[in-house]
Image 1 (tube, rainbow, N blue to C red):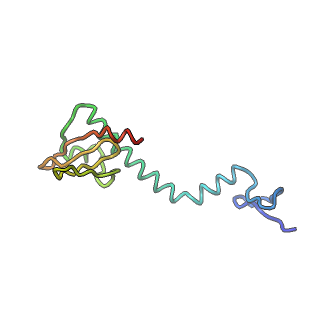
Image 2 (image 1 turned 90 degrees about the vertical axis):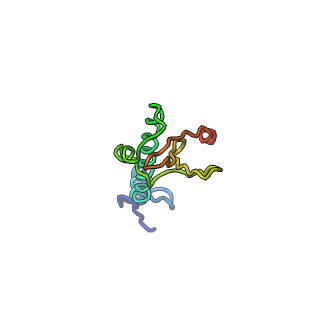
Image 3 (image 1 turned 180 degrees about the horizontal axis):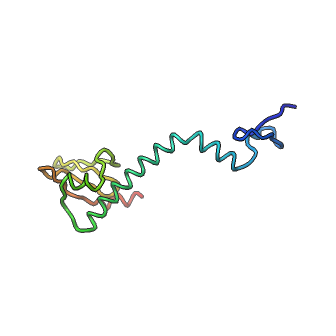
Length: 122
């Protein structure tokens, strides 16, 4: 009979013939190591989206309707990350980070938006 070892720690396996790991800990450790790179990328993007949403949400809750691009940048807003874009019938492009968004308002100013219809889909 062939001796098999745990894919994570190498310990000799006993039991079922198709067993690959000696414990749940080894199974989790192995899969976390294999998926680390992909998970890291997703976590990084999600973190940036959450930060952008929090910044827009805080400004909107404070009653701000207009803000300068440099002020958003100084708060840590990353303009490269947003969840979706909506173009109005008048041609105004609004970039959203979940339900909060902004559109260009001229001279490096942005108008803040809240899209309550986004909440209907969550």
